[in-house]
Amino acid sequence: MNTEFNLDELKVADRLPSPSGTALAIMQLVQRSDATVQQVSQLVKVDPALSGRILRFANSAAFGARRPIADVQTAVIMMGMQTVRNFALSLSLIGSNSSGHCRKFDYETYWSRSLAMSVAIASITARETTVVPAESFTLGLLSDIGSLALATAWPDIYGECLGAQGEQLLALESERFATDHKALSLVLLADWGFPIVFLDALKLSFDKRVAGVNRTADFARQLIFARLIGNYCVADENLRAAMWQDLATEAVLHAMDEAALLRFIDETIELWHDWGKLIDVKTDVRPSILKTVAATKPPALPGLDLLLVDDDPMMLARLSKQLAAAGNQVATCRNGEAALKYIIEHKPQLVLTDWRMKPMDGLALCKALRASAFGKNIYLIMLTSTENEDALVEAFDAGIDDYVIKPVSLRVLLARLRAGQRIITLQKELEKESEDIKRYTAELAAANRRLKSMANTDILTSLPNRRYAMSRLEQESAIAQRCNRSLSVLMLDLDHFKSVNDSLGHDVGDQVLVHAASLMRENVRTSDIVCRLGGEEFLIIAPNTDGTTALLLAERIRNAIEQKQLGGVKLTYPVTVSIGVAGSKGAEPSWKELMKRSDNALYIVKQGGRNGVWLDAPT
Image 1 (tube, helix red, strand yellow):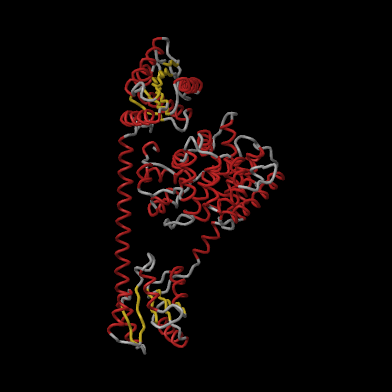
Image 2 (tube, one colour):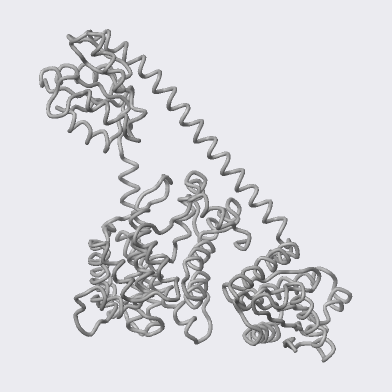
């Protein structure tokens, strides 16, 4: 149940993908009511890479500019501050999350697929006007951000879930994290200020069952089509052949025959490659090929993974051959600078370095490694021709762990390596224990979230229960008071429900409750919270909604329940609902008074014959 997922807890712990740098500054500026185009443009110009990408975006075919845009301020005016904000947010997230600690999460394929979907949805919305193509581009890029968030927040636990797919994966995620990647995507996009129509359309596209003809439903169908194209772009030839029929079927809804679909996909793939080069996203990845390469990778050699550094080619050749014969994996470098570059890229377990080298000697290499995060735990052995006490003290102060006197005795060197290997093994065991502790802590936190979710969930309908409803209503009331926003409450009661239990039994009564709860969930907006208070009573909290708008919401729910009756059961009365509505603004009235007023409005509906809605308007 995503209503119980604690987003603030993860944000405070800095465990979620989040914007940084210029993007964060732009987001904070645009949130201000007095922000100007000039101020946003100045911030964009601070980042040359962002400036270039925004100009490219403003001049792209998807955006549809009628004349070339040559300066940042004109681009911001044409795109709009919100679009620039969302575009900067997307680029920031790509830059800071192109890799991560979740070993089973394919970061390259994730961003490649997301970019393909964003290019596709921008092209689709340019053909079939529902939303501005530039805005749909950003939504496409971040439509599955929940998957990345789970991989970032719980890399080890989420890695265990990734063997599953579809509904099985969603069920595993809900069990482990009290949310799933689809729900978390909606939560994050709402937190970043994306419009409600975007969130509602994205939610519909996840369900893949889109009915009706309106802007939200049309946009949802476009997102479904774009997602299929995104998956097609990153698939290999065999998978593409299997996916073609679904694509062709969906294309019919967008007035494309197979020839038009082929042309559209070719254009999309070309744009996808262009955008990949522009924003540093790889577009030549194929999941099945990557898995094959990984499966055929040779196993690591036994012994140590070590680096030998010496400017004497004869010494390098002899020692590397002897150390490799002893079962170690040996790499060589001729000086400290080359060694430092190799260590950054490959992170060997042990470095065996000569002292006297140019341009960077062994002592400078040791100091550089110990001053860096990646070099603190590397075991360092110095090869030296001096046994001068002051020199050796200087070397140990620089960070070496051991030394071997030249000319090198192989027996002594191998003995020193075995001693180093014991230390390295202990370090690995400590790191594993530390990771295990982190894992157990994360699992315990997940278990606590599940228990908390269970304590706040109605078992029959899977809706939040009365405990959660009262707590959430108090929170939303505090937010409404602080921000001087509207807040509405809908009190719902199923009509003639007692007669169902009395005449047909509680099993049928349970079916009626589940059916009604499902219809309520389907007909509310993404921001609304549906709760079951108990028995046949339900409560809907509608944040940032005045009473008049809430009355329209209530009528939509009432009509849906009346029109979509429970099949397979012969009831004495059709399933209908009575709804009382009350709204507040800021601190007036309090949430407790709001409950009373909605209950009074419900009583009026009941007295008036049921199956209706009533707004308790303030006197």
